[in-house]
Length: 94
Image (cartoon, rainbow, N blue to C red; front, side, top):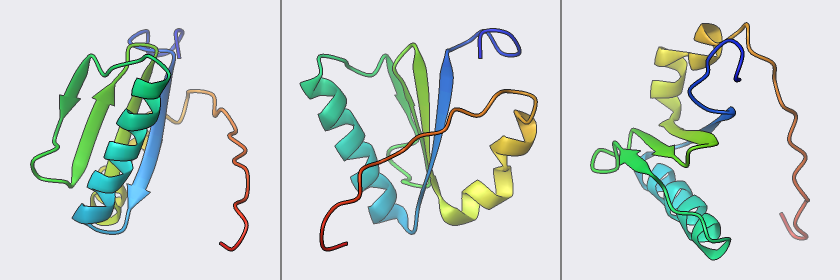
């Protein structure tokens, strides 16, 4: 995203079904990145659990409650930016 929006290299948008799910996703992201030696430079919105922003410098993660994700529709604002496909491994039993 260095062309259209030079604030970061990428935005990751994630949806949780409720506030508890949003906070669990945030905790897991922070735990996994801490294991890899990366800490958030900035964190906002954790107390509400509706829209949490995690700024890791090269990547900014937005974890939304599904209602807020639909309302704010960040994809619409950044529609000129390229989409980076992510392939996740499938866990057995899910």
